[in-house]
Structure formats: C-alpha cells, structure tokens
Length: 315
Length: 265
Ligand SMILES: Nc1ncnc2c1ncn2[C@@H]1O[C@H](COP(=O)(O)OP(=O)(O)O)[C@@H](O)[C@H]1O
Ligand SMILES: [Mg+2]
Image (cartoon, rainbow over all chains, first blue to last red; front, side):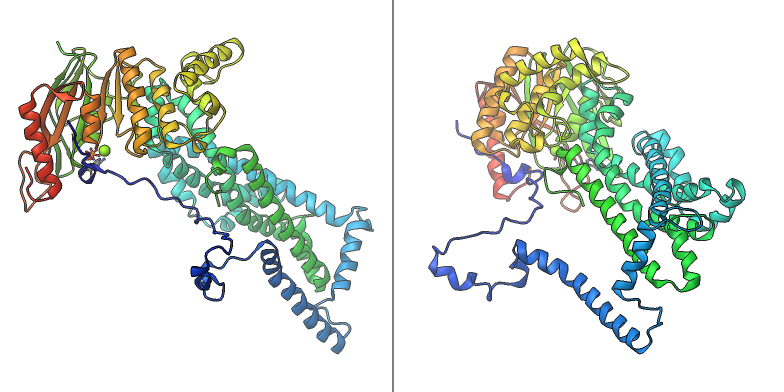
C-alpha cells in the first residue's frame, strides 16, 4: 500500500532558517555568462564585502581622521597662543603622561597613573563581582522558580527604577566617604538590571529542556546546577560586558565627588588647573581599559563556553 | 485494565476548546502513531500524557492510577527540537541521568561512579552509531544524529512510556528511514509503549500497531475554533497495513479530499 505524506496538513514548524549570512561565493571566473552581473561595480552595495586588509583600513579610518583633526586644531590654537590649555599637542600630552606613569609623585611618592588605575579597577571589579553574584543568586530563582519570581520580580523592578546617583548621599552618610560607598554605588547601579537580565535569560531556556531534565529524574536543584547554571554562564558574561559601561559611570561619579585617588578623582582634580594634557590622556586610557576588559571577557567566554559560540557568536 | 487510559478528556485554552471527548485505552507495548491537522491538539494530548498539563475534564490513568501531575522518569520524551542539552557533549548528555540519580547535591559523578556511567554511555553511543561523535556538542551534530542522541538519552531511565512529538519531522527522508528502523528495533527490544506524533502518514502506518487520528467532528465555518478535536479514527495496524481495511480506506479517502482542500470532514 502506498500512502503519501500529508505534509501540507501537518507540517507544523518549518526547519529554522540559518541566521548567519550566506557564505560569500568566491567563484573562479569560470562562468562568463554571468560575469557582468558579478562585476563589483554592478553589484548592490549590501553585497560588496571588504577584504581583510580593507576591513582593517576602514576600521582605522575614523580613528586616524580624529587624530589628524585634533592635531590640526591643536596646532592652530597653539600657534595663535602658545599658552593655550584647551587643545594640548600630542607631545604635551605624552610628556604629561610620562610624568604620571614613570615619575613618582612628589607628595605621595606614588606613580599616579598606576596607583589611580589600581584604585579604580579595584572598585570596579569589586562592584561588578558583587553585582554578578547578586544577579545569579537572585536572577536564577526569579527566572526559574514561580514562587521566587512572584516574590522578587516586583521588588527588583521597583528598585531598578531608583536613579542610583540619588542614593549616593545616603551611601556617604551610611558608609562614610571610604571605599564601601563607591562599591555599593556600583552595585546599586548595576545589580537590579543584571538580576532582571539574568532572570530573563533563564526563562529563555527552552521549556523542552526543563521537561526533558524532569523526565531524566532531575530535582529542581539539580536542574539549576546542571541545566540552568551552565547555560546562563555565557549570558552572565554578556551581562557583565553590558554592565561595565554604567559601572564606569557610577565609579567615576563617586570618585569625582569623594575620593583620594582613582582615575575619576584625578580627572576632576586636575580640572581645576584646566590640565587638558592630563584629562584627555586619562579619558583615552579609561576607554582603552574598558575596551580591553570587554574583549577579554568575550575571549574568555569563547574559550570557556565554546558550545555557546558554535552557531555565530553572542553579541 | 488497560496500561494507559484517557477517559473523556476536555482541554480548552481560554475560550478555544482544543480537545473534546477524547477517550482511548492502550495496551502495554503498543506503538501508537498519532496524526491530525496542524494545531488540532496532538502535542496537547502528549502533554497530558506527560503530566505537564491537566485536562479540564476527564483523567489520564497509567496502570489504573491517575498519572502524576508533573513529568517523571517513567514517561520519557523526545521533542522535534531542543531535546538534548546544548551545553553538554554527546557523552555528557548520556551520563547526565546517572548523575541525577546518584548525586543529589552536586549532580555530578566522580571516580568509579563516573567511569561506570561513561562505560554505559559508551555502550549506548555504539548502539546508536555515535561513538565517533562522543565528545561533540549537539550543535556540531546533524539533525539525525541529534535525534538519535535524544532517543538514547530518553531510554536511559527505562521509561514505561516513550512520548515522541514529530521526532523525525525535521529530518531528510533517507535519514528518516534509518531512524524509523532504529526506533522499531528499540521498541521490539524494550517492549515500551510508544506514542508518536507524526505528520507523515506513511510513517504512521509503517511504525504503528495502532493509528490514532485527531480531527474535529463538529465544524462551524463561521467560527473555526468553536469546537475541539477528538479521535476520529483508531486503526489497528500490523506491518504497515490496517487490519480493518475498510475503515483505513475511508480514512485515506478523507485525506485525499483534505489535501485537495475541497471538503472538510
Ligand atoms: N499554552 C497554550 N495556550 C494557548 N493556546 C495554546 C497553548 N498551547 C497550544 N495552544 C493552541 O492549542 C492548539 C493545539 O496545539 P497543539 O497541541 O500544539 O497542536 P498540534 O500539536 O496538533 O499541532 C493550537 O491551536 C495552539 O495554538
Ligand atoms: Mg505539535
């Protein structure tokens, strides 16, 4: 008996489409009939992809343009007035940075660039680490256990609406002007959003997997340990990467207001002397650190959680 | 007493009735294939058997007792997708049930227990022809290999019932044939009771000892969702043929009409 499939009736979901772009064809010139259409001049812009070298060149373009534009501006101002402070020359900035990095400060004996960096990174890492622990500790139950969600969701949602900076005076009153209040500001500023993000990531684990684990005999705790945790770890790294930007803002703000060291403290201190030759390199240095942290986290995730990066990377 | 029994089940989501008056009794060791139009409630029926959902009316019994209200190891499941754990290699996917069983607090095995679980998993991998893919992640396996792994994983707890929701729906025809053979062998070996939803009627005939068809008996053209579906055909099968050829012919004739899109039953 031959029976045809009733695919028209029953086809439930089509196989999912690949998300990655189709591979670019590097066709040898063996198809002359289509050659004119394939000539790059005729191809749509959206289908013309830069090669490796061109990509690097294009990527550097705006950076170089910025440096050139700055140099010209600085040159013009300095030639009009050699004492101008607004746009110091690259040489002036290098000199200032050389002193900060390699000449000990007369008062404290510290190499200021490094002591500032160490102080700021210490606060940043402490704050982010605490936030990450809170994000996992509350986000996983909130995303996974209905009763925990009912308890936590409204509270976290409300807390996350408080503008963190408005809490800063409270923190200074409670914790004093020391390290604690700066770290707590970072935590208050980043943790609520991170908790919500992680809870969301947990709910996005396909229900099929949770059911499957139940049929394999897992308890709730075992599901958390073996199914939920490992799958949200790469998401936690993404979450930390996203939270670093606000964390920097809170760090610099707290340091600007009350501190005795740190990158933000230094910038706001030398602002009094209009020391743009220090401020600008410090801003560049902070940017560089932020970029490096982001890259490092990404590479770590790729190494440690290879399975999560098999089908096109996350973010 | 039948092994699995659904008694006068009704399910509705909000205002929409999905299943109505569904009753069926299934003997131990049956291979029930389930077909029906898309969205008519086949997956819902499986969820009831799994205990993931409860019917508004009626009840589902297994060995004479109402089934537990949540999934348990005596009922295994294979979905069309997401059936294996993406963060675990093929080997780790197969040692997971042992870890759940033996390590309540850590969910992990060490030393001798781990070696034993891995030996058992290796044997299972060899049986389903995945030994070479032992240390690969699911995303690195083809669809067919993933489903073989999913079936193997579901079998590890020796469930009394295996539920499958269009398990081969996303596979190429050639691979699908291999999978059907594999599944039949497993079924003969284990004597499990299987419920398998499929949208391929030839597959339903070839594999099943019983073909169950869900459809709406009442139909309101103005309100397509006014009525739920029920079991309209329940055919006993043997070796790909229906024992009641008259009913089968009737059912197939209906299918042809449906495919033409002209008449709805
Ligand atoms: N949780 C739910 N809430 C509301 N409607 C649902 C839910 N699950 C399924 N449905 C609806 O119930 C109907 C039957 O779904 P399903 O059992 O998945 O159909 P099938 O598997 O036969 O294609 C569909 O119309 C679907 O939209
Ligand atoms: Mg379905």
